[in-house]
Every structure is written in C-alpha cells, then in structure tokens.
Image (cartoon, rainbow, N blue to C red):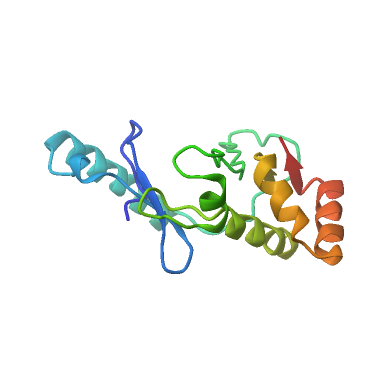
Length: 159
C-alpha cells in the first residue's frame, strides 16, 4: 500500500487488510510511471528520509499552549462512515460485501474503547449516530459505563 502521496490529493481505494488495518492505495490508473509523479514522490521520500535521520523521539507537549518556533499539527481522529452510501447500513456495520467497499464499522467501534483506555492523551470523535446507536444497544453495562467515562473526560466526543 502507498501511504506517502504527492502534494496534490489522489483518489484512493481503501480496504481492510487481513489484520483489520485500513490500507489505502491509489488506483492502477494513477501508477507512478509518469515523470512528474516520480519526481514528486522522490522529493517527498528524500524529505521523509532526511527527517528520520535528523530526528529523535521527543514527547510532544500536549497542553493547550502553542510552542514558538515549532510546527503545531493537530491530528483529529474521527470517523467518516457514510450511512448507506455504497452498501446497506447492515453491510457497513458488520463488514460484509467487501467487493463494493471494505468497511466494518463494528470493528472501528470495538477498537476505539480499548485504544482510548490505553492512553489518556488520545482523543476520538465519533460522528455517525445511526451506527453508534446500534453498537450501543449491543454493549454490556460495563462497556456503557466506560463509554460514559470517556465522554465525561473528553477523550470521546460526538459530533
């Protein structure tokens, strides 16, 4: 899978791998045999390799203040599961009919809770209430209590 894209966005085809990791690859029609794409990709790879060679792991200050002379990047983990876009709501939820599009909303919801519990600095925004309500009805009282705590702490947010 290709994770480093040129400076202009490419349309991508995303799917879940055998280990339920989301993988995105450009379609075959966007092959990197065009000279401009090769040049951009080469430059991007060179910058990435240089930054790896020059960098050391430094824990980022997660407080609300902006650090002068530092690039402050905010990555917001969130969902974007279109209810009934290419597949039925049921197909999206359980991850069936992957010949159309690979997605399993239930796995996303099941993995959010332990990931947030593993690191108090993590935040996640969940958007699609149609899927969340179905998932919620299937959860134990213990999981529901944990979700309420994550909402109260601000780690989990609905939008």
